[in-house]
Length: 403
Image 1 (cartoon, one colour):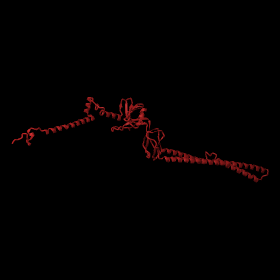
Image 2 (cartoon, one colour):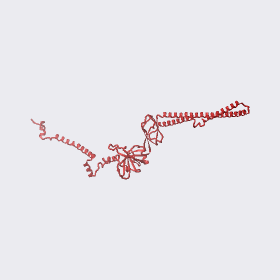
Image 3 (cartoon, helix red, strand yellow):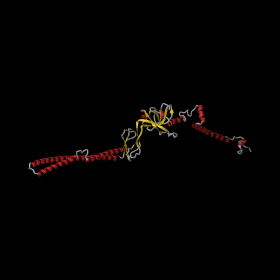
Image 4 (cartoon, helix red, strand yellow):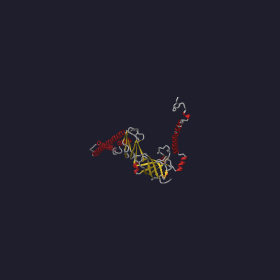
């Protein structure tokens, strides 16, 4: 039998014969080594980030020897920018004579929160007569309460009472005047009667002396003359009651007192009427309206401020307040402002208090002791700051001297 030389028995092991290399053992070994590359790169990257963030002593020594700075090769240096921002926003620092503090933009004299007048009770807000941005003068009506109608009725009633009491006084005076005139007439009549009686007595006395008249006629004439005299005295006494009618007459005094009481009641009603109006205590601009019609205000309902002159209230740390003086130039900056504002220190507080203006950083000391410093902005800066009441700012005071 002839055998094909190309045919190879399938049962012969190629590896044992040395004719084929062991490829399957080499390929998995190379792949497992390639998997280490991304792991190593990740570890290097993580180490670099952690090292730049924490900056261990060895890395600091390296930067010190080489003069390099973390992130200095970029537009935004790493860590350096963060430290600068914190130094500006959170801490009052001393650099070349400057004192830096947090502040807020306020109108001249601060914000006035206008509340309902005393005596308003549980009245509700009926109408708000102003809107945001309105400029008002002192005494202008800002809002009206719903007790206005009842208080107006009280004023009308008081005025009507005055009219009644005045008419009563006039009537009393007229009555007294008529009575006085009547008493005067009675006196004149009594005097005339007494005069005639006295004449008759003289005539009858003469006749009696001549024997023409009797004793009875004489006695009768004397009696009439005497009675007429007493009538005159009675009329004089009656008239004397009305001689000082406008000053001492009791009826007029009572009527006049009633009229005075009615006038006092009108004054009280008009005073109560004012409790229905919310008026501006001073001139200013309406900055905020905190209540609407139908609500019962429990506090301030309208915020007013004199925005014709804007100021900045800065809180300077107590350790640096000795370096600040009236007239020091000031620069005010904030992200919301298109440009920095300028002004001068015009007032320094006399009391050390707790800090009320704080940064958003949770690491900031919110229990610092500070002194309020008022900065008056120049006209151009004041105009720019009109629409930024309560804006948080960074205030840099150029004190120009060291402590």
